[in-house]
Length: 318
Length: 318
Image (cartoon, rainbow over all chains, first blue to last red; front, side):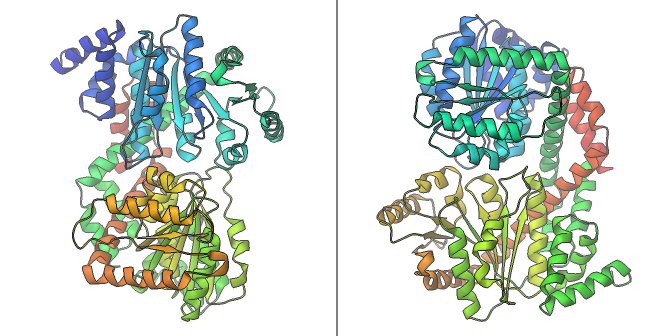
């Protein structure tokens, strides 16, 4: 790749990004978000510098105080002098293409801090796109020396489960008075949680949420040696409980390393990423293929859809 | 296919399903849901008998009264002596695998009516699966003489948009006091709606929901001759407004035919279906391929993910 002029330019940009130039970093992430062909050489180049950052996923329904807790977490990590990045990902909004501007605004306390980088990414229409592009964004931030990288997603649902699978540690936020423990259970969020945060712990019903969670955790199938998700109570706006959350995250990180689970998770993540990239590749090739012609025949009942799909797949792979 | 013994058996089963045997129909739909290899010959066989049924999609957030309105709609269609089918699809629950049992129970008033068939389908872990299997379930019901086929989905999000795209007419339900007009707008649901139903219209804030919707509809880009979604106010539990909904649906159906939009939609639907089937096929082939080996190399930073994905795609297509 070094002999490729384009890649060399990006290399310089990567060097600038590493040395703390946030505008260079933002340009690299725009390449990722726009799915620019250039990103392929950039990723190939920075690949050897990746794998260092701890990746923390943070998810929860709107209104639980995700941005407040993320902001407080960023502050706590910064106190330990790390370079901290936040990727705010919105998988629920296929049409608006809007990013989480509100979240960025609410985290403005860190806006003038060079050790903090905050970026929103939207899905641009399909989950596959996000599943394929988020790992690239994480690689860019990792290579630029950010650690931890926090991936924040909004909402409770299948998309959040998918994004959560990109993290080393998954934090699920709940809050009292939202009936969201049950919602989260329904959406399969509980199964992917490594840590629970019950935010707004100063509200009357917070203890009930903690109890509900504790029961759900007790009921879950778990083998000996498996991780048992701790529950941390926080009051994000007062930064209460944040130190405990940082400690618990450190505990999970140590467990990941000690048990070999980190390697297993990253392998699984790479498998997800490759599948998503292959899907994206297939989508691109289908667009240029005989898709329309075959679809017409299927719509008219003249061709069996399975035979048509097999033909498409064969053409796309060749 | 007629020379294939398996297909012949299914043929008999299809004949039985057509003649009103709900257990035969249920077995055919289980083949679809289990993604049985047999379904391919069944679909190929029944394909010439499809394309007749009107397909109505019905979606909305939990609590807006979807099941009540669907139940009332079923009653209204049955009064016109049609055979009516309801497919209740839950795309939000990847882990539980549970179907919408509650909805089935609530529609028990139709349980003893041979002209009504109600079936729940769950996603079994990935959206692609549902996007690929729902059209097959619709084909089976269509070929068995059900018209209309109502596809009911729960929730408001990208998954619902995907399922909605399977219908000829998409009905979006809202209700007062849930702030869901804005939610729906955020999730892109408004863009896919052909008709709006404001249910619980006897509640105080219902008129405000109607006004909000009217404003959103007025603001939408629409060319001359485009369909302008009507808003129907209903009180599902009292069956109020259901006749108007049936009339409006008939109006949309006529418009679809008159403008050639029906053909265009069904072509687009076949394109979506073929894409989903090709993805499912790719997923199957990836599982058997060098995915693990390549993922390890990517996880270790030894191989660029784009190159790995291209290799996977080439192997899967061959």
